Each structure stands twice: as structure tokens, then as C-alpha cells.
Length: 622
Image (cartoon, rainbow, N blue to C red; front, side, top):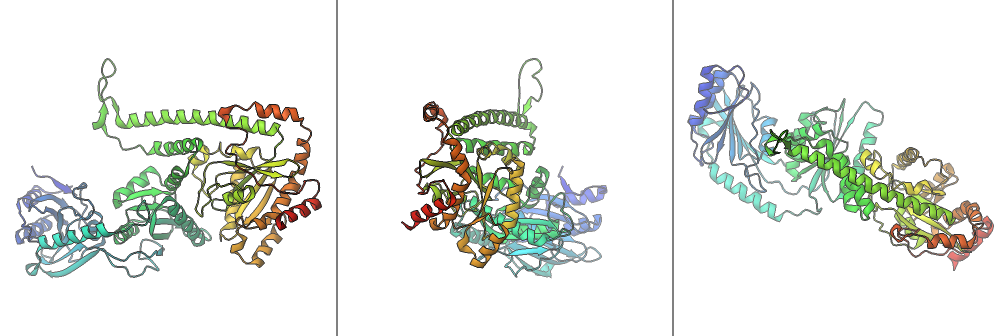
């Protein structure tokens, strides 16, 4: 018996028979729809008082008959048949409109999202007779490289959206008997054009094109400014991850939609925009629940990522040390565990014997169990590595070597400062999270005085909790520091928020009590007057450019003055004790200074501030 899809509740036996007869109709490839099919749809629609549609295959068979309500049609799941690049579904939708209305947004979204061959609406008279027909089909869109930002108050039209070339073309309405189009030739020409465009399309980023989406509640004070800053940071994260940002969508709402985050109407706009720009990914600037991510992906047929996934992907690309790789894998598994929700009983593992009969252990259960086993293994490995780091820190403390940790917001210039101070060659790029692994380098002062400078992973607002927990062991390097260098990018408009974020995370890590020197970096990118105003508000801070060694002179003098008492304490340690400690280092621990590099020498003994200043000045002048 033929299956009727959609809203079949309350159909009379006569209406059901009328709908089933639609399956008998055949449509030649050259025709958009035959008069017999149009008449059958109109009769069924008049009988039921609902929209009725037929999904017609290119072979001429009617594959699906669908019933909706008075104003819309809900299509069934038609799978991914022929949905490859440059190809359509080989299905065209012909359906009725009861109130003589044109093609709706839902019709056009279905056309673009499902990559249907064509969508046609037969407009009926009040007596149920077919009057006119309007149809639309997909067309290739060119020249879409500009980034636009849209700000909405609700689900309506966007403010600031420029007139964009649409990814579809509409024809009509025209009288039913006057439709003159060779459907087969039209679709063949369109597929050839799409295939040619897909072969010649160039994507600069390695991970394709994406649309970034930020949704905020407009009732909050300063919501727009914070949203724009957050979206700017998400753009930088996407660039670091290797994603080409095709467009950015910013919507202010009374409240966040609990299911789709955006409103349905706005999300339909985003789907059309993605088709215009040939984007295959949506990146949301918030953490999505598993149900939200699933609902959005089902509604849009696009790949959906949230902010946490994007950061995890960056960490996975950037991690180099065994510690870093283990920490990233652990965070990814903890993030994925609650999202293993697609149960599939057909892929169960059957077991034999008493107590083992029945459906057995499903693939979902196996995946969860193995993920939990892997989490336990990784946590044990990280505890072992943490103990090794603790041993290194204790030996370093016995030797009396002061430790200075560089902390701060990501991309503030921490690695560049480490390179400039110590002459190291740690990777330093103008990207968020360019370096993830902790690096320790020695900075040698005169009279055999030295200090270990440690670079830590950068902070970021709303750092994913699983990632924060996994990298907590990395921040242990800063726990035993004698001094913290809090590096701030003064050229960033959001520097005050970055300072607040860093201090909040230091408080959470119980590091806020360690003495700190605030280092305002990238001074070459701001006006001198602005730099002087900053120092008035932070008299103990240092203003410098990490790329210019000359500007680090004041920081070196402050370091020597702050560490003078620590060096004096270390001078009381017997030499033979220090040497014994150094000789007792186990090879597997990697030495006292993990990743040790050649250090630069600063001429100037730490015996007094004036003497320090004079000798350091002499070094730079020489």
C-alpha cells in the first residue's frame, strides 16, 4: 500500500484514496508537471483542505506524496541521495497553495537546503481549481567574498544587510497551461554549471568556509558592544583554526531560543546565506547543548560547531609535547561523552551464553565504555607527568633558582617576550594559542645569578571547563613561581576585559597571591600619550614592545630588584649541596629546566637598584 507522508491525522477514507492515486501519475523528464498531476494534487488539496505535494523523481515516478496543513508542507527525510558537490537530489517538489500565495520562505529554504531540482507551487482558486504556477530553482552565485555583520531585533529582516545575489531564481506566476520550460535540459545545464564552479572554486583556508553566529540578549547593558568584541575574537579563533570566515551574523534577541538559539526565521536566512557564500559550516559563539547542536544540524543540513569545539580543534593542532597531546585528547573525550547520543540498536554486539542473550551491548554503549576507559587511562598518565614536574620544581627550588612565569591573555605576546629576554626560539605568531606547551628558559644575570623564565598557555574568556581542567596541571608551573609577569596587549580595544579575565583565572588557580609585574606589550602600536596615561593608572607596570630588546631595559631592572632577596637567600646554599642535587637528576625527568635553551647574559649585579640601572644601561649601549 502506498505511504502518505506528513500530516495524515483526521483524513477521511475518501481523502486517503485520492492521495494514494497520485502515485499512479507519471511525469516525463521534459515536463515540469503534467496537467494530470496538477489536477490530482488540486483535487486532493480541495478534499483535505490542506497543502498536498508530490516529490517527483527524474525517472518520472512519484516517490513521495506529502500532506501538510493549510499554509505549509513538512517534507519527509529524503536522505542524501545524489547530494554530492555540483549535483541535485534528482527530485522536484510540486505542491499546492490554497490561498493563491506565492512561494514561501519555507519553500525556498527547502529548495536550497535539500538541493532539490526545483520547487513549484500550484496556486488554487477558492473553488479548488488550479489557476497559476510559480517555480524556483537553484543557481550558482559568484563573487561573494565580503564579510557582513547583521544585527537583528528578532526574526525579521536584518539591518545592515546589503543586497546580495540570491542562490535561487523564481519564475512566474504564470497560467498553468502556459508553462513552457524543458525541465530536463534546464537541470542538466544547471548541474553542469555547478560542477564547473565547484572545480574552479578556490578556498584559501584548509578547513573550508564558515559563517560565524553570535546571539545575545538585548536587555543586558552594553550587549551590542560586548557581542561585537566577542564576535571579533571568534573571527580570530576561526582564522587560527584554519577556517575561512565567509560571513558573520550577530542577532540581539529578547531571549535565546532554547532549541535553535536563533529564531527559526533567522536560521532560515542563515541557511540561504550559507548557500550564497558556499559555506558548509556554522560556528556559534557559545557552548551548545547536545540537543541544540543536533536540532540546528538537522534544520540546516550544515556542519555545526560551538566555541568549545573550535578551541579544542586549535589545541589539537597546536599541541606538540606529550603532555599537551594527552591534555587535549582528555578534554576532547570529556566534551564528546555526553554527545554520544545517536543510539542505533541495529548495530548491536551479540554475546552468547547465559545472561548474554538478547540485543547485547549496542554500539553506543561500546563507544561510551571505551571512551570512559580512555579517560581513566589519560588521567592516570597526566598524574604521572604531573609528579615528574613536581620533582623538577622541588629540585629547582633546592638549588635556589628563582622562577618567573609569564601569564596573560592569548596573543598578548608572551612567547615573543620570552624569546627577546632569553634569546630562545620559541614559536611566536600573531595568532590565538600559537603555543600551548609550557617552555622554560634560563636568563643569566651577572655574578652567576640566573632566573628561569616560564611561558604558559594563554588565557581566554570562558575557557572551556574540560579544557581548563585538563590544562590545570600545566598551570602548576606558575604555582611555584617567585614572580609573575602579567603581559597585556595594550593595542587591543578589549584590554581591560582581558586583564579582568586573566585575574579571574589566576584567582581560580590560587595564583593571585604571587607578586606580579604588569607588562604592557605592543607599545609601538599605540600613541605615546596613551602609553603615559596607562602608566599613570598602573605606576608599577612596564611599557614595552617585546619585539624591541631596547624597550625591555626597565623590565630587566625591575626583575633584578624584585629577585635580589631571593638570590641572597640562594647564596647561603652550600655549593657541594647544589652540585649533588644537580647530579641526582633522573634522565627520564628531562632535567631541571625542561626544554632548556641558550640564555642571554645581562650585565649588572643585583646588589642595588642604582648599580643595576647603570650596568644594564651599559650593556644596551655597548
